[in-house]
Amino acid sequence: MPLILLIRHGENDYIKKKRLAGRLPGIHLNDNGRSQAKSLAETLAKAPVKAVYSSPLERTMETAKPIAKALGLQVNERPGLIETDVGKWQGKKLKVLSRRKGWRVVQSTPCLMRFPGGESFAEAQQRVCSDLESLCKKHDPKDLIICVSHADPIKLAVAFYLGLPLDFFQRLTISPASITALYIGNTGSHLLSLNYNLAFNFPGH
Image (cartoon, rainbow, N blue to C red; front, side, top):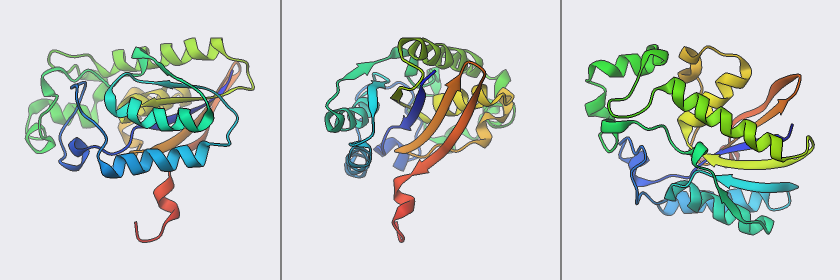
């Protein structure tokens, strides 16, 4: 099975304004997000990457395309990597959502949460991990591939492959434009890096 670099998309204004973007169309990287995508591309330009896959939303595609271009590859859209369907919660401010009854469930017992008009975390986890398994079967064990996705899908995948209970996935942190390296093997999975953020290399940022 291959080594997968799970990359969260760069910053957008919904992140800055603390709003839940969900699957809303038309959410693009802001200036800082585009700078983050450029830095990722420069960092990964010489890596022996065999393929670049991405959630089809704009913010993930805009993160994936500079990386793929630097590697001389094309971006392959994967609907299975898309953001969690938060239904009627998408577009809402986190401050407003935090006052809703379901917010405590999201944070403490997410295994019980189904977003109104959307999916459950269990369904999102199954979707993302099924897609990763499908990609693994397409590649040789020594291949290195990139999957650009979103915070919750990446956390859900890491939790699954580490054998963590679903209720523990919120204890993980995945920052914008961070890299998480996950090896999925036939005899077990290994987390090589979690939430590696290029900005951590620059004091003062």
